Image (spheres, rainbow, N blue to C red):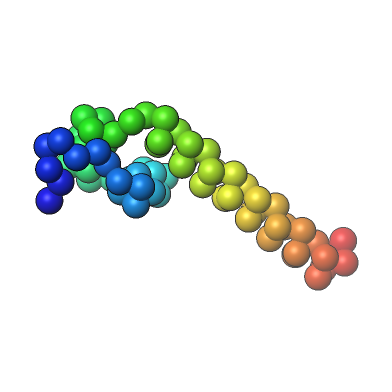
Length: 70
């Protein structure tokens, strides 16, 4: 259980961002994020995961185009 004075840890931020991206964030965790988390942490992790997602899609499309000969 998270203590009252304790900040949100890195893994909790990652879990919250991924849960938020899939739309399955629990209200308990969302409330913890808004009361104890720092917005910049969520913004940075969200941007990193978004960039990784876009780069993965670009890579998959290039791989498919390479193997189909287009």
